Length: 162
Ligand SMILES: CC(C)(COP(=O)(O)OP(=O)(O)OC[C@H]1O[C@@H](n2cnc3c(N)ncnc32)[C@H](O)[C@@H]1OP(=O)(O)O)[C@@H](O)C(=O)NCCC(=O)NCCS
Picture (spheres, rainbow, N blue to C red):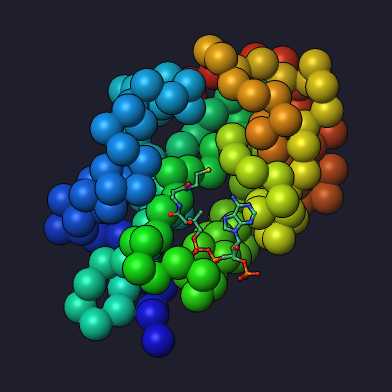
């Protein structure tokens, strides 16, 4: 059985490799990366899934502003192909979303497949409510509150938290 634990500095190369094989070398061109440039992932919410001494899953979150209001962007999240479908990603999300709520974060957004992320409480951002700093399929722009009313104030441009 895999264990979930906070990321450590020495995990860096294994995580980069996992992201490269999961998303391919074009990953840095994604619009979400415009929001990550020059900004560090939130250390407290960076977790990995480990099993048999191998790092098999990763999740990170970036701070963002939405119309100037602080929020979180979930991702990237990836699991080694040979170990998908065993609940690692859902486990990583449940663990870190609960932690984020306990740390006082109010909302999370992400770009991904709604049928999948609906499993952990995400739904589509209503049309016209937010803009990304580049091309994005708006059907894939999802959000989730972490505290009651956490989405109420969120509207406008999603920008880097710098
Ligand atoms: C997406 C990813 C992280 C899921 O990891 P995982 O550990 O296999 O996920 P889980 O085991 O927690 O959940 C798997 C379940 O979700 C389903 N699922 C996975 N991707 C899905 C998708 N895009 N749409 C709908 N369902 C999906 C699986 O069919 C499986 O269903 P089951 O439980 O009924 O068998 C993994 O497939 C991955 O690393 N993909 C490549 C990177 C990527 O696309 N990351 C997300 C970018 S937004």
